[in-house]
Image (cartoon, rainbow, N blue to C red; front, side):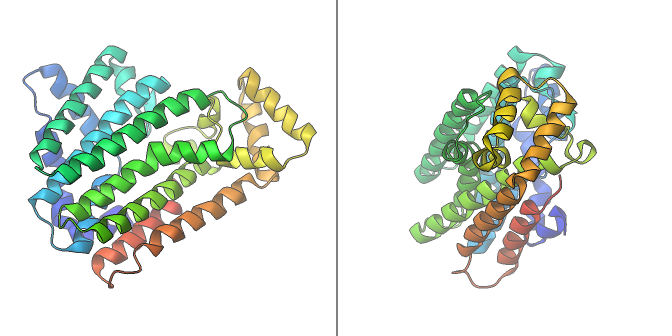
Length: 324
């Protein structure tokens, strides 16, 4: 099962999305067009717009407002990625060079600001104060998440509570917003919006834990990044947090020593990965992926069987079992 097959119930809107996205960012400044065109060619699977389309379809027939909502969500997401790469000093994203690596941080920040400005203008075009509230709240949570990540980076003693706070803000908040925006594009119904908030939040948490697992299980040619990349960047995620919590003190102290002095070799990465595998960090994280995915799917139970519901179930299963 691939994304194109999952998107079949909303195929018409999903296939038109790329062109609509690029049109939104057309500029009289050649550099802007050049950078935005580059970003457009490197977009991922368009998971968040797909969530908007499928959750809208779950509540009725898609309309122009649905496309507008999807564009707003993806514009906002793209802006956060551009700024995120500057903050993280990332040179690669999905195996391709980042904007800040090709151009520089100044241009990246300004392009990110432009994307945010375009997002704000598009939100206003929705003529829906509820949509403004949803995106504003998501923006606040994501920004808090970015700041929290800076605080937690290179901190070898991140707690599980801090980790979940981080991924709820950085990832799950926009998943939740995308799902609510999809439903809202069809009708403003409190029960529907609560269901979509719960579905998106739990799906987003499951998605991020699985993504963090790939740092321990993935291969560079599949992920577009080397195994252990998060560790090299000083990010302590759930598999390692759990392993450190249950390991004997001698083994734990050795890992703390490596982390606190900064990882300097592939051998140290291998040592940490083996430590996590030995002390159940991977199995624990896999268990929580299943738990949060199941919680997400519980929010779909009130809905009658339909092509959209089936695709949302498939999407959750696809994302939480992916190897790239």
